[in-house]
Amino acid sequence: MAKHRRFGLANGVSRKLVALSREYPAEVKAGANYKGNHMIKIKNEQELIFELRKAGAAAVANDIDNIVAPANGFIKAVFAAFGVMGTDGSGAPTQDVIADLKKNGTSIFSGATKINFSHAKQLGTANTPILADNYGALSSNPVPVNKGDFLRLDITQILNGTSPVQPTDLVVYVVFARGYTWAPEATLLGQISEQD
Image (cartoon, rainbow, N blue to C red; front, side, top):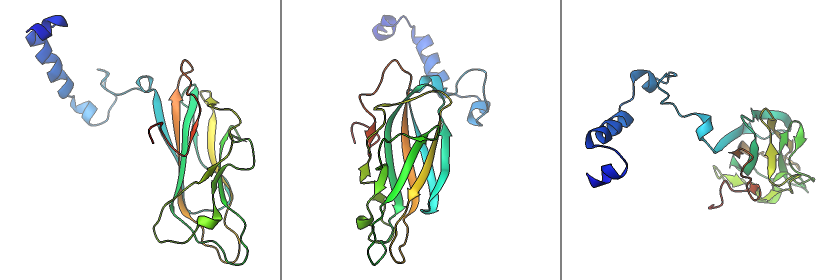
């Protein structure tokens, strides 16, 4: 009783709140927009993780996948990997695999290095994922984003040499921190949180 009185709730009211939190209308369970406001809304989410993908073998192309920023905020983190590594070409291959993340058509990276996968590490081990091992310097750090900004994934370079096998199934995770009242210290590269 004392615990309930401290928060101004009688036992009966407390039990009713617990019951309401567990019992959802059929419309909510079916995924409908229910007037009772049981659905999670984006205004309650401070961080969102977006996924940009390129299925199959890497190939040079623009606008492979894209997202539109749903609110003002910052890119808090970028993390990229291929599901299966490739095999470097024979002869004298020189080219890393390079992916790029662009905001409204302009790279978020300031130099030639973007999201790089070293060609020397493409060893052709079956079903072995490979993480990006080099990220370029950012044009702005942290990267600001306005509501409606268009973020797109490009692949600008692939393995060369004689008969290379390109890595497959690229995924790039973009962590979006919503709002301008709190800015991350910097955009994390190669990890999705400070604890990784």
